[in-house]
Amino acid sequence: MRIFIYIAAALWCSLASATEFKPDAAQQLTLATVLPVSAEMQQLQQALQQAPDDTVKLQLAQRYLQGARRPGFADWFHQAEQLLGAISDDGRQRQHYLLLRADMLQQQHQFVAALHTLDQVLQREPQHIQASLMAARVHLAMHQLDAAQQACSRLWQQDLFLFSVCSYEVAGRRGDWQQSYAALTQLWQRQQDLPVELDSWLRGILAEQAEQLGLMATAQQWLTPILAQVPTSLWLKWADLSLALGQAQLVYQQISALEHIQALSDSLLLRLTRAEQQLALSPMFSADLTQRMQVRLARGDTDHAADLVHYFLYISPDAQSALYWADINYQTAKEPDDQRLLALSRQAIAQAAGAE
Amino acid sequence: MKYVFPLLAIIWMLCASPVVAHKFSTAYMDVTKQQGQPVLLWKVALHDLAQAGLIQAKNNHQVSWQQVLDSEPQLQQYISERLRFNSAAGVCSMQTAAADWLVQRMQQDTFLLLPLQVRCDSNEGWQLSYKALFDSEHSHKLLLSWQLPPDKANAVLSAKSPFFPAIIAD
Image 1 (cartoon, rainbow over the protein chains, first blue to last red):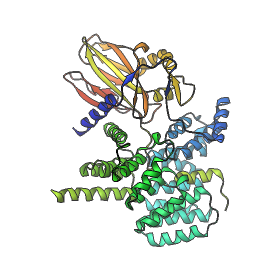
Image 2 (image 1 turned 45 degrees about the vertical axis):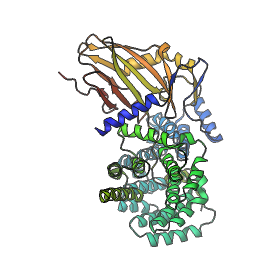
Image 3 (image 1 turned 180 degrees about the vertical axis):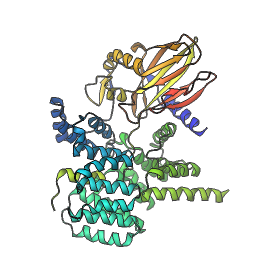
Image 4 (image 1 turned 120 degrees about the vertical axis):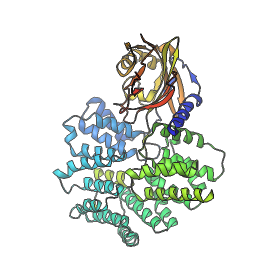
């Protein structure tokens, strides 16, 4: 019955949200937000137009996949998906293709398929650094800690620094937050001029570990200095920490100042709307968010259900729905944030029962 | 410590959990009845049609209305291959005319509204089969509003369940 109501609401939105019109022949219609590509990507696009070569497709797909992590750039996942879909049968045997394919799969929460794809790389080259790191990441998402450590251990003879970071992240997930945090902090302090990618990776883990230790302000401080260059997932972590610290104004300012705000992912729009609500501002974003959530509910998608848990916990409180989606989310994603959403939903149910 | 681009790119891509949902591709369809025949209104994102190569846009960002109108033969062909309306007497004919097309802005996207004229030889055993865009848009689904008594219903059609009604009543 409930799904019927959601579909009806989504269909109603499709009717009520805007009026239909017949454009003039020359009128330009928007297909997608214009997202600026780098000079390097432009060169690759031009090369691809001249010759549809697998190597160029893979290079461009990698840059789209990398760029798609930036706030407002999620549409690039589709560009990457299309490029990967156009790789020849021979090209699909390449390690580069398999790594990008695995990344695409794990982004879609198809963790088992991602691991299967990575296995194809690791069978050929058991100590492959990128494949090992990605496998560790996927095992962590599935809370398979022994397997994650095994993946980290493959880095032992390849790169001691990467092995250490990888292992301390796993150790934290085993509950050794205090020791891992201290060791990882020391490791970070010893590094000079870390490339931005490595710095972001370390700071993301340190922020998670500090949060688990209850050091919310410290956790936020790990991310604040690099906010302009981190992927959306770390923006979300920063926004959640900031909201927990009562800094809704800061969250509102930072997210609403992002470029391409009209293309924000549902997850960032959720944090922005939550900040808007906490500040009791006149609603600018909640209607868009509600419409997006109604469509997702109507579609019945179970991937990335964490967004729906946030929606039912904070934007449109409904403890039963929050728990329903938290359970679904936890069936695929089992990271500390997913565990926390489950606990918060159960807490909301208990509170609702207590209030009756 | 020296790290090269592919490794750093992978690390950056992995530096946090995969928590961000991609944009979902959703189309809508209303099915009503006029003068004893089904009338369909398909609302589909122009972006999705361009991604499927059905509209020849100059770039990924914009398309002129004339370019959309010029795609009528391709779209007509695509519809005849991917959308099907059946009745107890067999496959019904289905046509769209660019002159009837409209545009609507919804959910940050531009949607094309295509009325589909259907002619069936029987008014029994009506069933829609929808197999559009699943190959070009991994997440594509159709939100269907079936307003044909007595089976008034809302449904979601996907690559895994492309028919409505799923089973035809005897």
